[in-house]
Amino acid sequence: MHAPSYPVRGAGLGLRRDFISEAAEQPPPAASFYEVAPENWIGVGGRFGRLFRSMTERYPFVCHGLSLSIGSPAALDETFVQRVKAFLDTHQIRAYTEHLSYTSDDGQLYDLMPIPFTEDAVHYVAERVRRVQDILERRIALENVSYYAAPGQALREIDFVNAVLEEADCDLLLDVNNIYVNSINHDYDAVEFLEALPADRVVYCHVAGHYVEAPDLRVDTHGTDVIDPVWSLLDHAYQRFGVFPTLLERDFNIPPLDQLNAEVAKIAAIQARHQPAADLEVAHA
Ligand SMILES: [Fe+2]
Image (cartoon, rainbow, N blue to C red):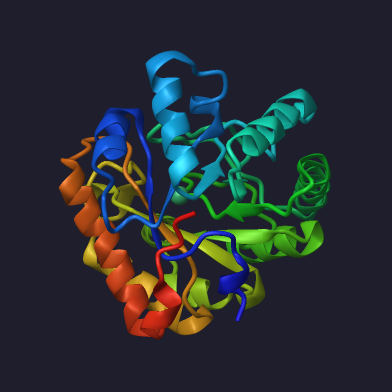
């Protein structure tokens, strides 16, 4: 099985400035690892810098980038990628992931930028991913993103995603909430999509909550609790691909830390249903 080879295990929590102070003092017990956006922490000094360092010294971390913009028509910012590499090395961060996205859109809640799913885009993105992996001297995983409009599609989303992963020879960060949101917004079957993903490239996972704008429109806000159909999709993913490390993303309306811990514990409980307890040891460094 692929998952044990990923450098973190179990259930994790996206670490935010809002609660880093509290987490440093009383770490949420269900969290086996943390994730941050390098853009939010590169060059940060002072009190927050010290807090961040105290966390990376104690716990396993992964990074999830925001601004690589792997599909952008603009040239790849190799200086930025070098800075990310230095950051990963400084904090001994175990893995780096990014969005399979055509925009650096993560700061927006409701992005209408078109994503052309074409053969040309597959080649273009794959070459850039390979370059990033060369600079970082690490294999990376790309996340399936939520999107709200995609005019002029030559390929289905699933075929586009799979072709990029194959040609770039990189891994997949499976975001089950994004699959759910897209399945409603673009009227497809979430389980069918999930099952068509390449098992050997699924290494890591995100769950999050989203906003119900209308019965046929969900917005990927990371601002609410995870809903039952998304938990079910996670369960189905473990059944299909085996258990892989999974992280709770929460960026808005952040509840008290014990509530976040309860959601992380729920991830761990679903993982436990799919694998023997011995495999679930907390991977604290
Ligand atoms: Fe995500």
